[in-house]
Length: 448
Image 1: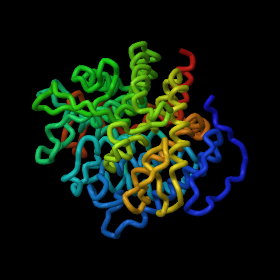
Image 2 (image 1 turned 90 degrees about the horizontal axis):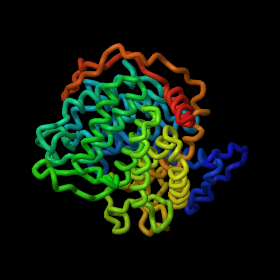
Image 3 (image 1 turned 60 degrees about the horizontal axis):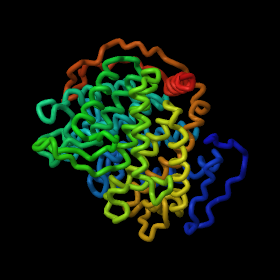
Image 4 (image 1 turned 180 degrees about the vertical axis):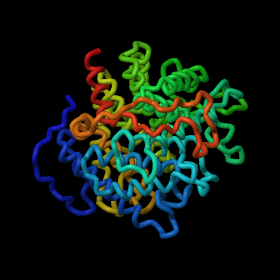
């Protein structure tokens, strides 16, 4: 079993910067200690950024990280607060999520026009949805759930059936490189956003879009008959699939499918989909272990900074998938335990000087510190380590109460690509608290 032992023990302090993080995957105290070390390092690095860098960004977008990745970082820190019970960073995280909303409060800030894409906007929207699910500190106006709904509307408005029979282009604006590419990360994020909104609200419009987007991913060839998840396609030749595989979209699709399995009370089609996606993930296991590896680029040391964050995103999704689809919990927990142990053993130091290796299955010869382009590695290490706490999520969140999930306004069938403040579907209800959703979901799934 994957149950963490909640024992009282004294965690020794790190013995200098040369010592690797010592993680006992069976001890919640140990997991929380290592997670705190990693989260604290991220916050220290963030607070040390240049004065001209606005809230929410660790650096100028694209140098060396992209705006899209920052949304994933803050989403992980929202989860850190709930999974560990350590809320000391909440004000910083809330400010970051709030500041990057933009004037239309839909994560389309004007200063990111040059790099704004559907993948990035949906990454930030998923962070906002997590904030809603976990009853995180509320924004200055409205609700985090409203933000996720508006972004959903934006994405629906950009759904492009004129080319390749559907899907989302990677870029939002035609003047940006990548506009002709329909990427798997945007597709996966939209599927997950739709499925989680369906679970949070009970509204069929969201679940219908989840079904539609997943079927498109299959019919377009981005998800193969064996459920391998491929990188994307160009609208100028829809049948020419970029067959590179990355962990993040695989993990995100697995989580979304698990949510749909739960939402449909154990529908056999979704159950089979979840099982096949988990099996397809064997390609990401390193050297006959259960440790995640970014097979497309890791062995050749050619992964970009964004790709170095993918294993962390995948780990987060696998942990959540195991909660709502317990029948795959065992193989997923095996991956998470092995990967977390490997990730922690390749992290040394603390604060801004911490350095984590990208490879989790072996020692790393070339490791960048957090302050020297090492953000992605620390982010991923945090995600996979704190993923071990998800089986305790019900206990951590047990004081949250179920809220009225009745929709006051139907989401539109067509959506709006611009996402003005008057976008329909931005209802004032907040849906269910995350704990209530997951508790009911896990209970129902256990009876299937």
